[in-house]
Image (cartoon, rainbow, N blue to C red; front, side, top):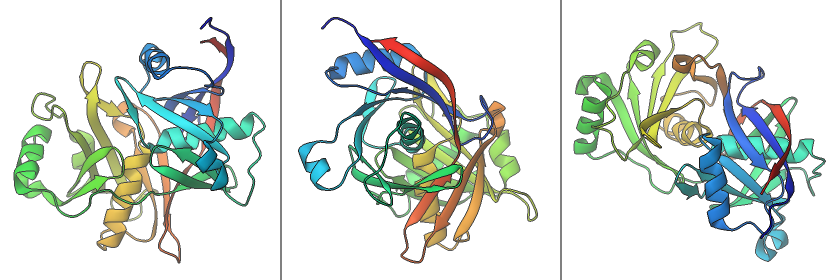
Length: 285
């Protein structure tokens, strides 16, 4: 197929300040592109994720989906990811998208994901966990060794699998989280989420870091919606976090990510943040 111009945006997610969040490439019309072409373009962007917007499938349209998104990271396609969900919705709305109902409904690999607007912020309903409960002790010991902390410094742990296969651990403090220098050889192949509480009186309740396999070994994600969604479901459910809080992520990478968490009366956990468009134009695909 001959390349043709397609509308494109690069969006910074979970921040109100350009270049201080998590960047996302969004191809606003992925019609006719093969999986291989999508993956190749994603790898070329050298970003943590790239998305391609498409019309809903027949099943998705019947269920009320406003658009469909395919989410890629280097080397693989993801069934769900948080910052691509918010960034894609931001780009879709900025391009003139109009939701059919009260919520924007996104179709993706895990099914339908609802989003709503809170002023300048968008928030998505956290998808159900595929796996929950405590991690095997051998995993916890391995993670402690890979993070360079004592096993006793991990005060809680859980599966946080909502598509990405996150293993979540809580350290004693946000200061410990920010000081981590993980060993990529020990943690090879694992998706690790680390959370630690900030002192009372801070403007954020927790510091979060996310480590995952990247193009050249272990990588760190600036701000991670899927992980924060799963962490919130675990922490709130276990009584380790209040039903409404703000998490900081990206501090160690000189970013200013802010993730707004709230569990509503129905028990749904909403994960929100602002997005800003940094690049707007066309790409040849």
